[in-house]
Length: 446
Ligand code: GLC
Image (cartoon, rainbow, N blue to C red):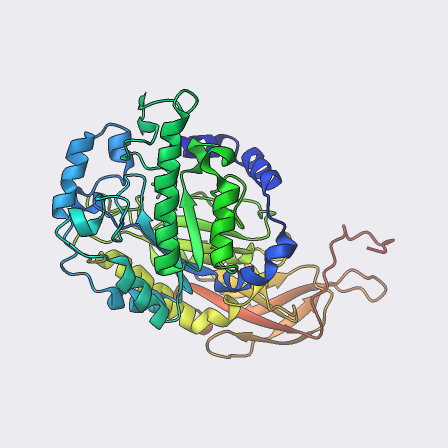
């Protein structure tokens, strides 16, 4: 949260610094990144003891809204009594998501698997009394959903971890290096457990900001994970040793220049289950956010926060189902596509087929009448509505015979073809897309 403020204040500058620090070369990882680039939608799952009282995950004790012992009392209420991992996986599948990322351990240090390094896990310390991750990963893999492991580098509950509450640390690494070494052994051990038990397709680290790459031994960790599974993908929160960037909650206004990026976002305002938070985003809002991320070359990692008994709140179920129905109809314009036209050509999100001979236009809300594309030099072979195939008429306006500047393409969008959330038009081009990006002057070779 502290970090969010900083991000808000100088997002661009930070992003650029983060990118400059990136140690991985995009050319070396592009093969393993391909499924991620094609996936577009992932579901984030924040599940932990914080859902017992419905308070902020880990931050509630760190920020002293509740004492650490009171926070830990929640261990007694984590039952997972209605937990049905196959239902979770099937719902994720139904949403259209291609991957899921689950909190194996948050900053509170409570592991959701049976850890031999600590008793602070849901097997030994909660009435759930079982490893809740193994059956989830099995169910997800059964549904061909790629498996991601959120893993907090920070562990504010571990006695040998230096940071604890917002205004009190346990010790300083510089004065007690051996103590930090003990923590490293523990954290690397737990990471290795997650690695060997679940072999994640993707690692979603969090909390790297509390220490440097050297202190976290980030290079060594990356090596361990990629040696075990050369195809595993690592998010951008490992102090420069990740593969892609992770803007959080805040939608990038200009197109990020990273090769791969993923916006993680909550459906209400919180990651975990919080009953007082009824600020649910609507399906329209989620779908437009999703489409905009994809149009800008990114993915959406959409969060759900199940209750302590394993029930997914009905509002979240509804969003995932609505999103799924929309994806089922319009998925060809989203999955396996690439970022669309740069700003200026169309007033809305667009995507392109990989060979760039098909352009998809997204029309949020109810648009009837005409919509327009500017600066498209191609010939159009056909325009149709995705999901129902209706052919649409178009007209080229203002094309001057002697000028290289293409005319404006006006497309008729009748009311009866519209989707209840976002209508998608498919524009078949004669060849790979060719754009005119000049100023329209008459003596121009642009
Ligand atoms: C932040 C928070 C954390 C949350 C994460 C999800 O970094 O520390 O509570 O899990 O964002 O992106």
